[in-house]
Structure formats: structure tokens, C-alpha cells
Length: 289
Length: 172
Image: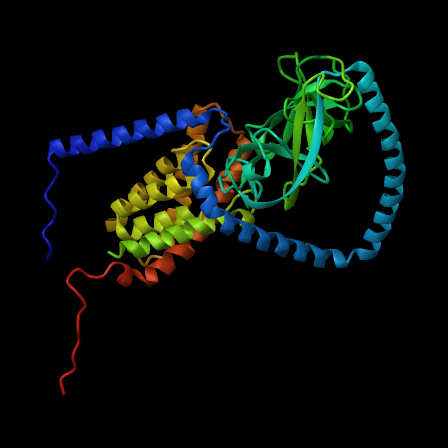
């Protein structure tokens, strides 16, 4: 038989307790320091991200192709109906494009006349989702474009259905995108019909809610389209979603709307980062100083 | 103990957790491969191995995905410690053991995570707690069962008997 280990002396126990206490204090200090919004990642995060990048990229590539193949096989059964629907959509889009061009020209002319303070130069950077963050409480994805590609914290990330989130942190090779549904997500949005501004908040599995804090009598209705509002790094007018339900907060001061995001968060594979750079007033050609 | 092999398994688990786990989510819950490994290490090799494995796994997760750096070190380290404390009190070949350990460890780690998030002002709704916590705990119970029995099959390789192998020689 092996002899049982000698019991710890009170002094040893006290020493271990002190070590545990110091570790706990260090951990909580680290959590407090990183709990605030931060744009810069630590050196360790950057190094680990660079090491993981090829593995994540490969796994994301396989997972995305696999999912697309499965969905493609499923869609084969509905091809005829899908084709008819797409033809109708193309017809509508041709008409929409003509109207859009007219509006764009008119918008540019009006902007020139009004001498708006800021104008955005928009460039889209295609990216692929390589990782979905495994943490249960956070709704985030990692994309395969980072600092080296010009991605910066706060930039909007979109797909063909609308805005899906904003870039939270950037490493050299990757960027973490905070989705609309994440509890920490905030974005200024605007009702496209009535031009009422609102504060969009992620609610986890409960979806997304917009608070119309500036006007308790905001004229909003289910079905209204919501677009990005005034922000420093996101161009205004990007489609976010539609209002699904309207209500009044318990304090009777704020109207809120449950938002149906345009994006299907279960099918995120290819996205585009909006590389928007705000130009100061007077920077553009012909602008007044 | 073959610590380098255990470390290799843990790093492979980390790689799987950071690459494929997110794509295998069901009902909003991703499989906690690292939690399953930490719980298995604790149950099979004791609290000290569980604690170190948990802290190391947490450190890697914090460096890769950390919103609150230190959160995973704390929760996974404590999970390894708590599960490992049971090592000498349970039968290691019990089928229910890893399932219960995976379920309880998920509830405990995610419960603690939730408390810390609330402390930092990141509230969660009742629906989120019910959906995410229960789905995650059930998912992780199954994953822990699979991981545990795979490691258990290699138990004598990973933790050789300190008295050495018994050599049986047949007399002619």
C-alpha cells in the first residue's frame, strides 16, 4: 500500500489561499481592463490569431462549401419555382435600378447644393466567415480580412440582405464582427419612411430592438424599412431590417420597435466590409471651405 | 503521467474548438470541446491536472476570442478543479459519470460566466438563459461522454502504473 500524503499544515494552506487570492485579483483586473470597448488587441491576441488563421480559414472554407452544397442539393427540388421567382425579381430590379440611378443623381446634386459636412467614399471588401465564436453569450463571427486589408474597428459589415454587424476588433489577418443580435451591439439607425432616428440594440436570442428615444410620438409602423443613420464610420442609408412590431416602453417616454433584420444569421458565409472613409468638409472637389 | 500527450490532445481540442465547433451549433449552442476535455482530465487524472488543463484552455480561448480576458481562465480552471475533486470518489467506468459531469460543468461554468457578465453590465434575458444554458448543457453532456470514453480507453497509456508494467512469463 502507498502511504497517504501528510496533511497540510495551516501555514501551507494559508499560502495556497493567498496564491489563489492573488490569481483571482489578477483575473478580475484583467477582466475590468478589457471589459470596456477596445479597438486595439493585445500582442498575444494578434500572435495567436495569426497562428490560427490558416486553420480557421481552411475549416471555414470546408464548412461554407459543405453547407452550400447541401443547400444547393435541397434547392434542386425547387428549381422551377425558384427560376420563375428570380425572373420576376430581375424585372423588378431593372425598374428599381433605373429609379435608383435617378435618385442617386438627384441625391448627389442636392448634396452639392447643401454642402453637407461629411461625405463617405465607400469601397466594399469581400470577406469570408471563417469562425463563429463558440461562446454561448456572444454573437460574433470572425472574417478572413484584417488590418493588412484595410479593415478598421467600427466599420459596417454587410451581405446582400443588409447590415449584419460592425467590426469590433481587428488583428493583422482577421477581424471580429459583432452581430446585430449581440447584447452589446449598438447602432444609430433611421426609419427610411419617416426619417425618425433610433438607437438599435441587440437582444440575444430575443432579436433586435430599436428605441426611438428622441421622439415619444415617433410615426413608425410595422413594415417600415430601417437604414443606418448618422455615424462616424458607417455610411448612412444601408438597409438594416424592417419593423416587425411597435410598442411603448413602461416609462411611457420611449417608443420601441422589434426589428426583423434583413440578414439571416444562420447563413453567414460570404460578407462584405464597408471600407468607408469619411471626408471632411471642403475636401471634395468644388466643395466650399 | 504523459503530460506532453495530454497537452497535445488539449491543443488539438483547442484547434477543433476554434475552427469547426462554431459551425456545429445546434439551437444556438456550440459544442464545448475544451470543456469536455477539461472535465474528462479532471475525472480521470485528478483536480491538479483538471485545474491546470482548465486554466491553460481558458488562457488560449481568452487569447483567441476574449471579450473579457480572464473569464475563460477562471471558469474553465474552476470547472477542472471541481470535477477533478471527485476523481477518487467515483468509478471511472460508469457510463453516466461523464454525461453528468459534462452537464453540471456546463451549467456551472456558464452560470458563473453569466454572473460575471451581469457584474460587468451585460445583462441576459430569461429566454436566453433557458435556451442557451440548457441546450449547451445537453450538447456538452454528449460531447463529454464521447471525449471521456475515448481518453478512458487510453488511460493506462496516459497514466502508466508507477510500479511499472507487470510482466507475465509462462514457464515451460
